[in-house]
Image 1 (tube, rainbow, N blue to C red):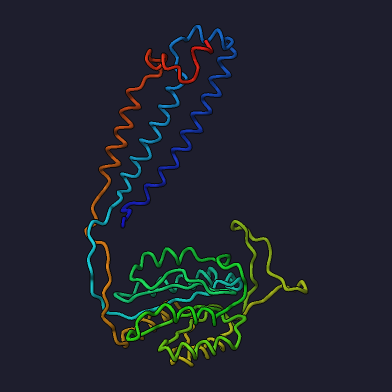
Image 2 (cartoon, one colour):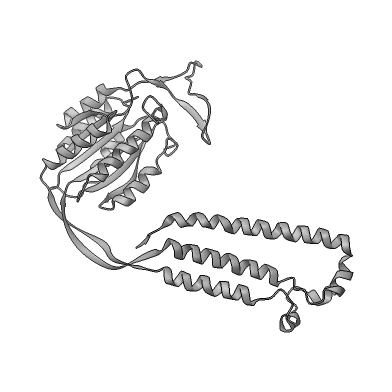
Amino acid sequence: MYQIEEPKYFILLVLIPILWLAYFYMRIWQQRKQKQFADANLLDKIVVEKSRFKPFSKLVLLSLAMLFLTIALANPKMGTKLETVKRRGVDIVFAVDVSKSMDAEDVAPSRLEKAKRLVSKIIDNLVSDRIGIIAYAGEAYPLLPITTDYAAGKIFLQSMNTNLVSSQGTAIDDAIDLATTYFDDEDTNKILVILSDGEDHSEKAVEAAKRAAKEGVTIFTIGVGTQKGSVIPIKKNGSLYGYKKDKKGQTVITHLNDKILREIAQVTHGKYIDGRSTKNVVAYISDALKKMDKREFETTKFSEYKDQFQWFLAGGLLFLVLYMLILERETQWLRKLNLFNELEKK
């Protein structure tokens, strides 16, 4: 297992393609200027010790030096020891609606982004609970199995978008059924948090909630959106191309359907929460978790992360020294190798 202490330094890697572009630009410029001075055969006779191979090899060495030194600045760390830690907590699965209606912007910046922020804030307030993440639209897909790795949870969370699931719709029943398979212990408190606008839900969702209740799952539903509703923007590369229309060509207006979300929560003795206030959502979920019995479980994690920057620093300095030692003149032993048939050309 590894960690990157200072990932911000990876921005320096953009200098490498810039360096290559500058090199090829200079080569083209030099060739044009040389043609103005003399033809190729005459130039080969005048500049007999000019190497065609060394300038490119120096470019490669300089690029490698920049790559290794940048990685050294980022300071990768390697986990060197595994230890088993005992924790007390509950199992929480987040099911996030990624259907197209979640692109609506009646809550800023959009329903889906609001849902992602809510989950992120809830995770920030967890201590030793285990989490899992599911994405669903026309079908439900597991994104993150039950784990105590909150950092991984946030990474998967940020990857969510409304193009994640190809089949459209809102199969909340599939999400509930899938969530019940996440819980691997009969004794733990099982919590499912569903974040959705409630659009297009069928009665199958309530039936799925009843099945989950029999498995001991408590469902909290968070409504994301407004009763007034909003249009669904169609964007490509951040630019607005229009709004979603129905088969009759009419612009679709999507509304928050909290009725079905309330029914799902009620069936499992959970709670429906208005998702417009992040503070209220986080406070309610945190309070509810504090009142629940915590089960003790064991988890394995890496500890004692050690710095690994020195290896990349040494490599970067080595490539830099080689870069400075290599001259652009053609050496006799390299000329005898005739790697690029230079002797035949002359």
